[in-house]
Length: 326
Image (cartoon, rainbow, N blue to C red; front, side):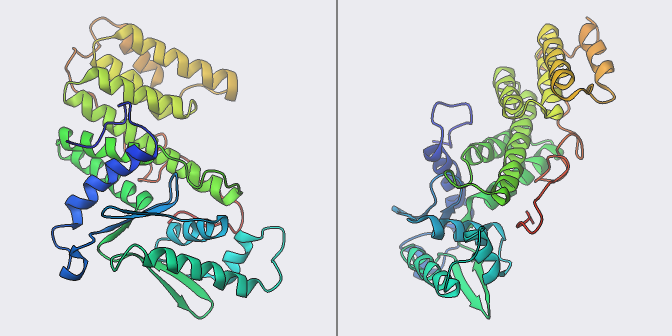
């Protein structure tokens, strides 16, 4: 049985784990060393409930500070993070007394958490006054696994492998449905959340285009509509929704998609859709210009409307001194 599609009724953290674990097993189980074979590969979830999985073992990370530190180290993707950066994140209003000892205590809790996940778990290194989370070949973190999936889906589409692209993109969208560190606040967290939301919308757009190419127009429309509902100001999502309606042979729905985009941008932002939309709406209004049902639709254009790279999403805005997506 394959991973649930993003439009299935199974949603949230359970679907997140179902989707990603299927890939992890396929990707790295085959060549796992003998000393790790009894437990298997390790997966760390930073989206939704912060936890680790290794085979049948699930370990939930308790405590606000350990979760924040694990997230910051994981988001930095192997880059050393200075102890004072961790302190600034943990105590934004001013460092606690004896903060260095407090950080060592948090690191000790993280190491205990990782040790419960077996020999394949990520390693927490300490060099000087820096800390670094190192993932080996048999450990993965959900956000970076999803990023690789989105890139893989785009490559499949470029190669004309629509079925493979649809499967991978839908799995990425499921994983990215969960929120980074729910229950925690901070400008640096919001900056990352915006990036992962943009990544999810790109996965949905790729999945919509791929399903259109496979002839599943109803599913393509649901996926594109999900991308629009995630951010009403994402023009590229509106563009893909219009395109998949046209590919399904529904000119009226395509025109409604265009009208909705135009209204939202005008009423809320005081702008019009970018160049090319008027020509697209004219095509949608022409009985001879719309694609036949079953005709392929061109996917999201590289570099357009929030698809600049896997972590696209337009201009990136980060507060001064905040950790930045790499």
